[in-house]
Length: 307
Figure 1: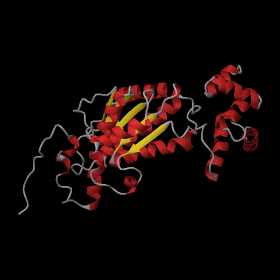
Figure 2: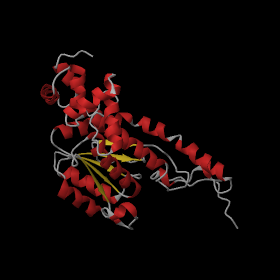
Figure 3: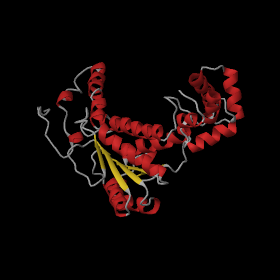
Figure 4: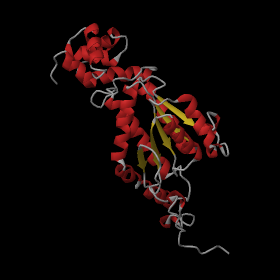
């Protein structure tokens, strides 16, 4: 006989583990209605992220200060959370031409656990402590990423980070926890469409928050001009074409003029952009960029250009 349980058991300690009253019949409906139920739950995620923007902004400001001070940002996670953190860190290097050690991602179980789940690695708090002990310093910022907020690997890493004097943050989908960190980014995504499947709403919320966090850090560090990726590294034909289009969008000039400026600047989009907008040569443009800590708007101001 099929149990007739209709009321989800409430567990305030782990909201993602609760049964969702809106999806109790998900296995009884048509395929398209299964997808509608999942999509309806997904629609709640942006609001959960929006509610945590003040805390996320605090984390961005710490990260900017950390990187300007010669420190690094460490992501620490396991399972889906860890994989999302690895993805975010990896994509910053080609997109914004940042040093590869600015954002360092640590995933429980190492690289082999990225493509295949390894049992119990997330339960090893000592491994979390060890990865921070050997790779971080007191100048760094350590961001734990865990749906429950209680993953031992992440908790251990954050504890070690506090011990060495690093600043810390936790990104979690559990609003009921009170972790000992400098910034708590707690996303109230509630119960999943499938109880406990945190690769769903919790994972989507973490992806949104991580992408927003790292992008905001890049903006604050001058890695964009307006909403253009002026720090992009042209490592393939698609990106080489994009760099010319970026210059066209920013200046209103033609393809040939932008391509020539890019060639004269050894492929550096920022330098080419400053040259095109100010009329300065490459040497003056680079000097102005250096004086402005890499910010295009600041470099243009140095050269007397009023936007």
